Length: 298
Image (cartoon, rainbow, N blue to C red; front, side, top):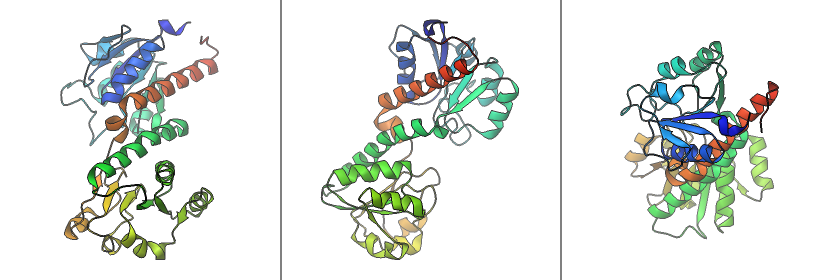
């Protein structure tokens, strides 16, 4: 079967979903959308009047990243039928459901209905691709909020996971003095091998006092009150950790610091590139699934 006969649904989310729908149309899919912030511009993409209509006969479903925010799907405030229950109700057996951070109970229920699921956030390639938008967005926000130049400044990156690695590389290439603190010894060794300045935990207080730009990427609260007190009030602090964030916000406020907690950076700073990445990942997974089942994918 040629891909031009395949059907896709793109439902809920931010501007990334708009561009994902357009990208799927470019790849030959007949696409129906529902609950998007604006209408995509592509002849293969049509707007559905309900979630049921959007999901009807869809082979590939692109839901938001993250799938849920505070227990709700983005767009649900305007489209009341945009719920987990309705996704499970209307998805057809054998379809591929794609989203970010899919809850375990949803995965279990979908599996019982014969629905395959693909979590973007668990796919190493997709996650790594999205770190580019995250790093660039974090740097853009830091430049906007700080009165000093980034080039030549002392920068500290907390955490050397996917996002921390990409961000630290950008900063080094922008001629910043880039320091990294990472508790995992293997990741710390990787940062050192990349030519970055690695800190021991005992060196953090002095490093924090020198830092002009602080980027917190670790997925846990590293910067507690005892460390926050070493940070200067004019330091630009950018926290990109998922909720609840990577620092003690009440303590930061008490100390007169002004951290910025940035969430959903790819959707805000590079929605087109990020949407195209998501669409490619979804199509790649569908192709892989079809081939595993011995079906033709042209």
